[in-house]
Image 1 (cartoon, one colour):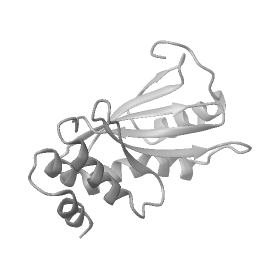
Image 2 (cartoon, rainbow, N blue to C red):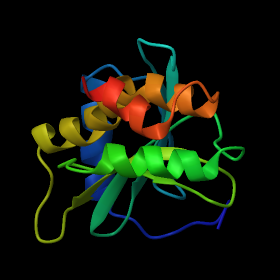
Image 3 (cartoon, rainbow, N blue to C red):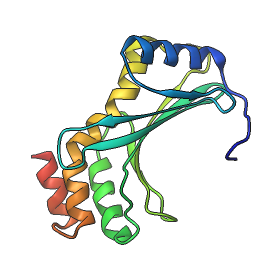
Image 4 (cartoon, rainbow, N blue to C red):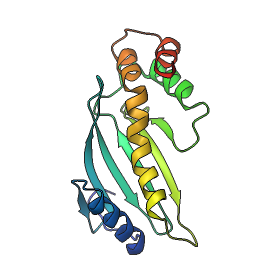
Amino acid sequence: MAGTSREYSFQIAALVHKFLKKDDWKFSFDEDRGIFTFNLSLKGKLNKVNYRILIRKYDYSVYAICPMSADDCLPEMAEFLSRANYGLMNGNFELDFRDGEIRYKCFVNCDETTPGFATIKDSIYIPGRMFSKYGDGILAVLFGQKSAADAVADCES
């Protein structure tokens, strides 16, 4: 699908664009594909995540993507992310078993409505907050410094 045009809601894209401009984010927007991209600096050992916002016809998804891959420790990372996901209310961590990509996703259904600024803000800020909370644990598991259970416990204490 890379490089191809696709249908998306120009109204949803305009609202997200307006929010990002108002909130002073530095971003780019692929008008052919309806995808916003930018980076976010974090405090902690994991100091950056890459963002992608995919606008579709009736919804959008916000992805914060870890710049490091878990391809060398997939079972341990899967356990860590499953433990971290338990009880999360708005979004979840995902792990791609093909390449080890770690990301956090927020999904916003816009069918029969348009999202307000508060909804857009939450959908963009929550993935960064989750990487701030769990980033040190992700790195501890990636580098074999802690078990998944211990790393999650440390992040949640």
